[in-house]
Image (tube, rainbow, N blue to C red):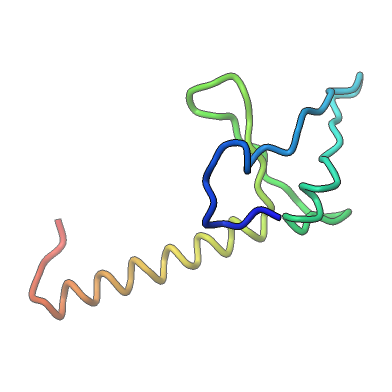
Length: 88
């Protein structure tokens, strides 16, 4: 099983899929299992900014990341205020 602390490309690759006539792909079972993707889950599909491809994220995972990021920003802002620093 892959963990979030690992960052080798081969650890983040689940294999290859084929696009069907209707544009559909099947997410490999290992990926669905490890990432907790279940029927009915909503995924966000984003074009890669530099390459010809896309990435997919579970909608709930994106929400959780944004909330975590916002809490960390608030913590850092409070720390800067406490230390007497200002915003740029």
